[in-house]
Amino acid sequence: MNSNPLNNSSNQLQSFTKWRYTSSMISIVLMLFSLTVIGTKGFNWGLDFTGGVVTEVQLDKVITASEIQPLMTAAYQQEVSVISAGEAGRWVLRYADIPDENQRPELQAVLAPLNSDIKILNSSIVGPQVGQELVEQGGLALLIAMLCIMGYLSFRFEWRLASGALFALMHDVVFVLAFFALSQMEFNLTVLAAILAILGYSLNDSIIIADRIREQLIVKPQWNITDINNLAVKSTFSRTMVTSGTTLLTVVALWIMGGSPLEGFSIAMFIGILTGTWSSISVGATLPEFLGLKAEHYIVAPVPDTP
Image (cartoon, rainbow, N blue to C red):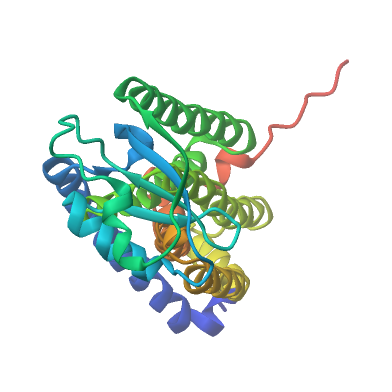
């Protein structure tokens, strides 16, 4: 008689094995494609990084962003960000600077078709020096976050499990960056904030599965690592789906209700949650298996008795 209790559900666990391996191969192919897209197309940096003009205006309260946007876009021949300043009729207009004053349209004339009393409250120019500092600080923030996560994972888990969780994080960030490079949507500070949030969300999912793998390795050292991983994924699958589903509902609501100022943030979070759920199950659990994770790595040697 075979004492392995997994025999009663071997077919189901075998399907988990095939699913994990297949999804891991798909992730590798997509990640290589994503890195190629990022390297060839680059990003459409927003004014937060490139610099530009920020103007705050006061119009009639009945005027909407959909009326302002086409007038500004046509006059300035570029994408103009129109953001509500939090007060009815008060808007923040953001666009790239036009150095040649002869070609720079007068804002009063541009908005004249609205038949509204136009007041320019303030206007300022964000120089490229500030934009370069934001790029450097944003990259530094990502680097520090990854280093802190790496340090925590190294302390919490054996390096094979830690590498699986860390690679899953990189996988999620690369996918989000590739989407913005491919679509050429504006990459601004809200998108950067979403990427930092994705790091935390994906890390949480990966740690839960990695913790379950560690527990099973200690409790069932006679099992092979494939069965351990399958059991860990199976036992956390429903919890992962519920958490991801409820979070996605919140992000979709933010996407719909937040409007254009939060569109980039919402899209980045939406993609990050989907890829984070995928990677924590496939990449985070499968990579340690290929790196040779065994129960022996978590068995503490007994302390010899002193004579």
